[in-house]
Image 1 (cartoon, one colour):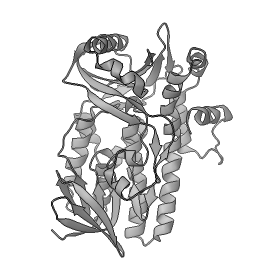
Image 2 (tube, rainbow, N blue to C red; image 1 turned 45 degrees about the vertical axis):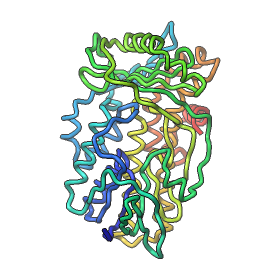
Image 3 (tube, rainbow, N blue to C red; image 1 turned 90 degrees about the vertical axis):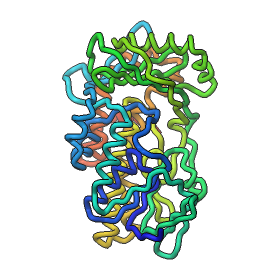
Length: 393
């Protein structure tokens, strides 16, 4: 193998496959690489926001999304034990997103990318190293084979070995959360149209409807609390209690998947002309699949930067700077929103903070922050900005 590509993407999950779709539609030659074959199960909050749904439709996946049998949700609810508080459904019922099983979206994105004539998929191939050669990069596989590309994109997750080997700087933002996730199969006794977040016994328990007969339940906590979940009786009790609060009756499918570390580090969006997208740049607390939304939207911004550089002659420094600016603008509100519950999990004042905050439509705040620059002609109100800064970073 000694092939030459415009872009080599290492990591073919949500962000990598999304990027391959964008670039392939523009006729750029793309190598989409992953160490595993698809589909595969991966721990996730399993949902995409309405903004990410719009991006997927721009990729032409509208029919695929309907076929996946996702479950629409219209708001969020935080449960503190004796009482629970709704966010986003107080005044009107508006689509916030769709809960769907990640492996189905993974498969649809990878298959759609593979159908594009300018995209070649290399699945089940482990990358050993990436080496810079003048104006191009050499991607070397552990098999001894290699390919060359004008640009390289890392989309291989928060624990990227390639990012570590390239010594891409990593900043610790806070103590990470760890845990496990389950898919339950059964039936809904009541359809609420909400994503439920339970704060109990030191755990953040995210319950996301992901189909007519499936519910995703993910447990997150500081590392010291995770061994508590190794006790099957304790785990079964917490699962039953969480499912009951989500008005769902069913059984877990298979063994749990490991979650973490979550929301603890960031890397720059680009390094020595290599772009980073999705969790490798920053992993988000997986409330209702906010990480999937982040991956899809970050891929769109990366595609714009690469197309500008490779097709329209935009100078590399200018394209990378614009990518970093747009990625940060997009990520900040999601970072604030998803860190909200983990901040509440650690706060002894959560019983006092949650009730008044439920009067604010936080999903609308996220949407507004995405659409308007906070210091532009349509500034976001001061109080919501304060909340984002308080619980974000």
